[in-house]
Length: 402
Ligand SMILES: O=C(O)CCC(=O)C(=O)O
Ligand SMILES: [Fe+2]
Image (tube, rainbow, N blue to C red; front, side):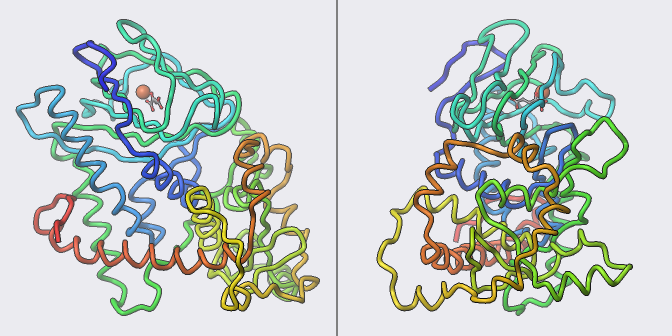
C-alpha cells in the first residue's frame, strides 16, 4: 500500500473506498461555490453549515479521524494535532499551481502537515493535473481515486500541480496544525450550534438547502477583468451539462421582471421545477440547490444501482410529467444564467459520464431517488443532532458510537 520511503511524505493507495469518493463528489457537485483562485471551486465545511447542510459534515467525520491518525502516526507526533482546514476542492480547465510550500504566506504559518485525497481519476475524469515534488522521491503523483498523499507543509516539500487541460479534478484537502487557536473544529461547532439551536427542532424537512448569496455561485468568464457580467451560474451549469433545465412559471418571471427591486438571479432561490428535453417533472423543489442536490444524488446512485425498468403504479403517479410545459418554457432564463453554453461545456462538460447518463435516464427511477435522497438526508440530520451535544462538550468533532 505504501509507495515511497521518503521520511517527510507518504503516498497510500486505496485509502478511501470508491463509494466514499462518490459520496464526497455528490456533496461537492451539489454544494460548491466559486473558489479562491481562478477556475477553482470549493466546498468548505463552514459553507455547508451556512447553507443549511450541516448534516453533510457527517460523512467527513470518520475520514477526518482516519487522516489525523495517519498523519500523527507517520510523523510520530508526540503533541496533539488539530485540523486547521477541511475542504473539497475541484480544479477545472486552466487551473494550475507553480512551485510552492503550503505554509508560504504569513497567514498560513500555522500549517504543519497537508493531506490530499484524490477523489477522481486522471485520464478518465480530467487531463493534466499531475502533482510533482521538486526534490526527492516520488517526483510525480498521478491522481487516482482513493489515493492519499501526506507531506509536511514546509519548504522540505516544495510541490506543484500541472494545468488542468480538460474535465474537473476533485480532491479532499486537509491541513493540520499544532496551534490549537487554529482548530477548525471549535469554529465549526460554534457555527453548528448557532444554526441548529436557532431553528425549531420539529421542522418537517430540516435538511433542505438554503442557498448562499448568488454571487457565490457566479463563475465569471474572464476572472482577470473586473467586469463580472459575463459568466454563468454554477448551479445551472451543473444541471445543464447533465441535460436538465430549471423551469419557473412564466407568471413568476413576468412578476419578477416587473419588480425592479427583484434581481433575476434570485429566481434560483425560489421554488422551481426540473425539466429534461420536452418533459417537466411534476414536483416543485424549494430552490435551485434543492433540485441540484437531487440531480447529483441521482448521478451518484445511478452508477451504483441497476436501472429500474419496471415502472410501478406508484412510480407512474410520482412521475406524472406536467402537461403545461408551455407555461414553463423559459429560454430567457437560460440566457441569463448560462450565457455562453460552450464556455459551460468547457468547464464542466465530461463526455464519458455523459453518454452513460444519457442512455440510461429514467424519470421513474429519478422520482424514486427523490424519496431516497430525503431518507439519506434525514438520517444524516439525525446523526448530527445526536452528535452535536457531545461535540460541544468536548469541543471536538468525532464519531459517536451508538
Ligand atoms: O491538489 C493537489 O494535488 C495539491 C494542491 C496544492 O498544492 C494546494 O492546494 O496547495
Ligand atoms: Fe500545495
